[in-house]
Length: 421
Image 1 (tube, rainbow, N blue to C red):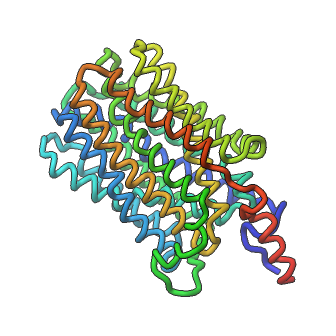
Image 2 (image 1 turned 120 degrees about the horizontal axis):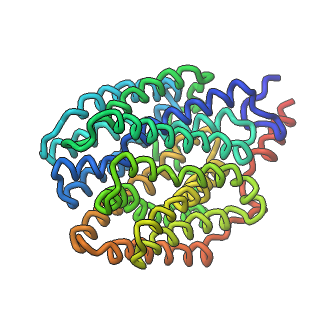
Image 3 (image 1 turned 90 degrees about the horizontal axis):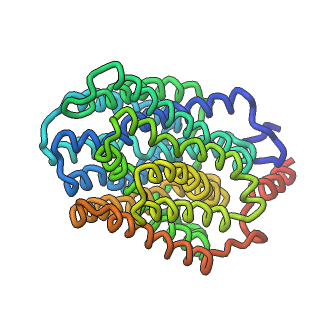
C-alpha cells in the first residue's frame, strides 16, 4: 500500500524531497530578505514621512488579511501549491523590477503598488508551510530543520544586496539595488518551486474558506488563546524593520553596514530552529512560545532603556530567537491541531489574524509612535516592550495545551493506516 506523507510514525522524508524543500525555503526567503530590511531606508531617502511609511509597510499586513483566504482555498481545492507559488512569484518579480527606479514621493501610488505585490506574494509563506507539512513524514521533528534554510536564505539575500551596494552608488535617491536583486531571486524561487514533488489539492468536497474552518478547532481554548497572543505579538514586530534600520543609519552606519547587521538575527534563528524539536519535547509549546516572546521583550527593552548603538546591534540576535521559538513554533502547533485536508486554510487563518490584522495595527502604531516621539527612541520602543511583557503574562496564565488530548499525526495517522491495511 502506498503511504501518504504524515501517515506512519518513523517514516523519514526522502533525501531529494528534503533537499528540494530546503532550496525552495532558502530562495523564497532570500527574495524578501534582500529588500524588506532596506525598505525603510529607501522610503526615508525618497522623503516619505514616518506616518506615510507606516501605511506603506501596512500593505503586507492588509494583504495578509484577505489574500490567504483565496490562495489557501486554491491550494486545498484547485491548483497544486507549488504551481501557485510559481505563478505569483513570476508576477512579483516583474513588479519589483518596475519599482526599482521610481524616485517619486507619491505615497498613494507606493501604497497601492506594494499592496498589489503583497496580495500575490504574502500568502506564499503559508503555502510553503503547507507544502512542507504535506511532504514531511514527521513535521514536529523535521520542519525546524527545513525552516532554518529560510533564515539562511534571508541572510544570503541581504549579503547579496550589501555587496551590490559596495560596488555601485548607494548614496543617491532611494536604493534601487534592493529591488533588482529581489526580482532576480524571485525568478530563482520560481525554478525551485517547479522542482518540488506535486502537491495536488486534497479536499474531496467543495467547501468555502469559512466552511473549511468549521471544525472543533475554533472551540478549543488553547488554539483561540494562541491566535489572540499571536495577534498581540504581531502588533509589535513591525517596529523591527520599520524603525530600526533607519535608526541605525541615523547613528552613522552606512547602508551596506545596516543591511549586513540586520542579518545578525538569522544566526540564532538557525540555532533555535535546530533546537526547536528538543525544546518542544522538554518544555512543551507553552515554554517554546514564552522563550520567543521574552526575546522580543529583551530586544525592545534594550532600546527603551536608552542603550547606545553597540548594544542595539548586540540585541539584534534576539530577533532570531523570537522568530524561531514563537513564530515557527506556533506554525508547528497549528499544524498538529489542523485537520489534514484543510491544513493550508488553517495556516492561512493564522496568517490573517497575526501577520494580517496584528501587523496592520502594528505598522500604523510604529508610524504613529515615531511621529509622536521623532527624537526619543526610548519612548517609541517602550510601547512594544510593555505589550510583549503583558503577552508573556497572559501566555503563562491562560495557555495550557493538553498534551494528552492534542492531536498527533504520529499516533492518529498510524492507527488509521493500520486499520486500512
